[in-house]
Image 1 (cartoon, one colour):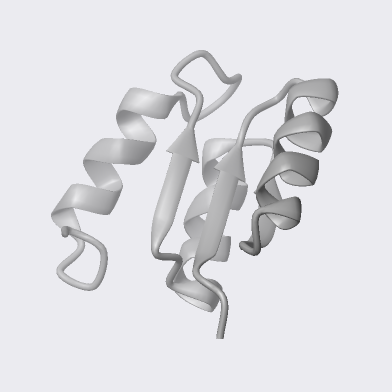
Image 2 (cartoon, rainbow, N blue to C red):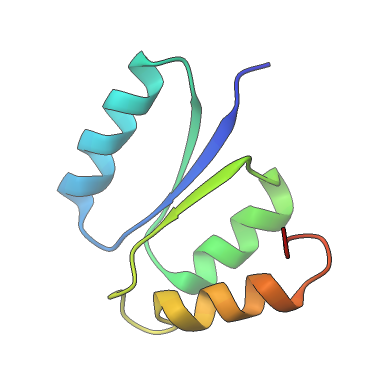
Length: 76
């Protein structure tokens, strides 16, 4: 099974470009456009790596990271 990466960014072009590069390198990739969406996807996917933009609307990257760190399942 390929390592799973969750990309979180509100810029569609950045998501698509990064997704192409990661998939070409053998990673399984999921996309999220907001912090709220990322939190939902994290519990569905449990990715090996999260690439998280800090400046996203709504629940920003810092707050999303704080929630992830407080959850025992995603703290590491």
